Length: 190
Image 1 (tube, rainbow, N blue to C red):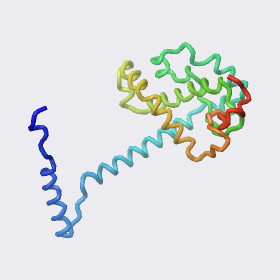
Image 2: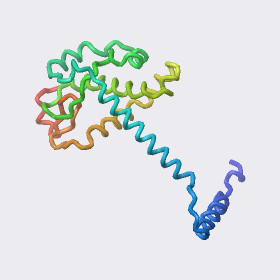
Image 3: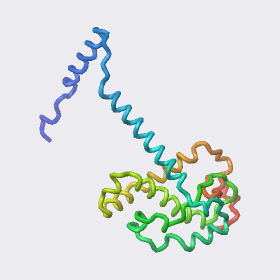
Image 4: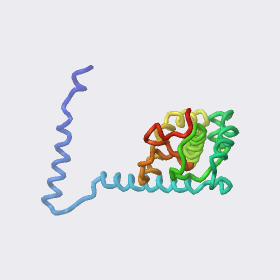
């Protein structure tokens, strides 16, 4: 490492401090670039929230009220043999767009876990495909970006959707099922 790269950069902030003191002395308030950045951040957040709403409202009415039996059937027929590329282009082939229900009506079974994993994939793929910049990427780059961000986006989505839900019973899974806090409450033994 060269010694020049270790120079003190605090001196460059002296000009900024001088400008700030001039503003205070003159009584004029100037909009600094950080305010513009803040506005842009709020616009981005609004945009992302509206995209989430669009994805939540995009469900197949045939799957609005899915039952335990439906979940078991769907888990066997959807998503098993689809490549990531195909899943990104045709998310509905991975899992049907059921309407999410964060209601904790029954304890989870293994099919709930796998099926909801596929359903969340569809939700995140729909979200990604709403971004024009994502759609402009070549498919290999889309897949790479999706692989790197799926887990984080899944958790962000989950936390956003369940932030106001009482979790005393357990952890909701989105199709009416939940994982109980107490392991002894599981009806289905894995």
